[in-house]
Length: 69
Figure 1 (tube, helix red, strand yellow):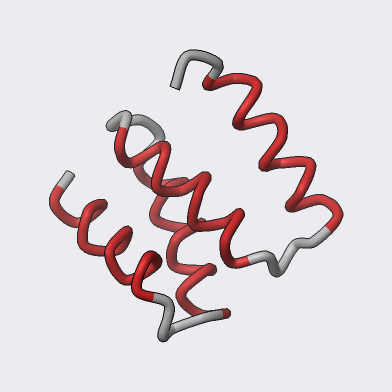
Figure 2 (figure 1 turned 135 degrees about the vertical axis):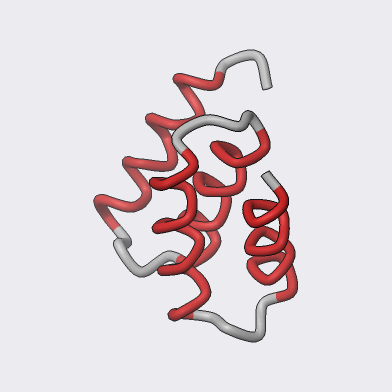
């Protein structure tokens, strides 16, 4: 992702409008984890997404990915 700052800003805007948007929580958390950055925040975002939508395979995958990181 070339414009990480822009992507982060867009996802944070989504979360301001829809704080329980599990897809946006997961996307932001996964992106942090994939970049090996802000892993504590990434875990909190992904954990919140999982609480909202525990059967979503993308969120389950993100939980495994951050544990690996």
